[in-house]
Image 1 (cartoon, one colour):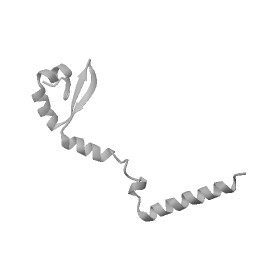
Image 2: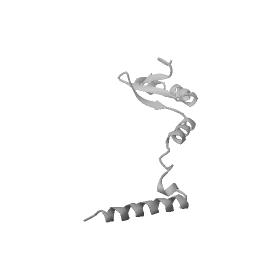
Image 3: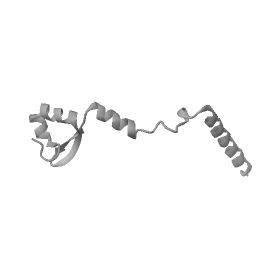
Length: 89
């Protein structure tokens, strides 16, 4: 049934959704529309693994800083602000 390595058209998805979903539970499946890749179906486990491995936005934010590091950061900002005031006419 796969056209080329787990790639199906939107028409295939309409006609054979059960089979395609079953395959997507084993490995990601690409859905094409007008011969262009448009979607990827994958298991929730694969999705969660991908989200966990690429979503590093919370790392290094002020909210995740240790108290000591936050204090150093605040001191540095204050020192910079003080130095800027010295150079203002």
